[in-house]
Length: 61
Image (cartoon, rainbow, N blue to C red):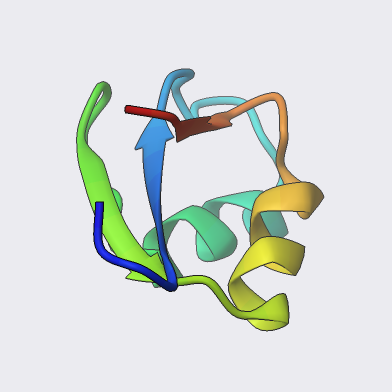
């Protein structure tokens, strides 16, 4: 894993979640379950993950 990045995985579906949660997941670049995206480790991205912790997971490798 490169220094200064985090890997985020979508582990639950966004069906029956509020539109705000769907927008957060979409803005992170996640579309399908069990997909992983790599984003910079900034307070903005960490805050987005903390808004929907029941849908996302930070992958540690």
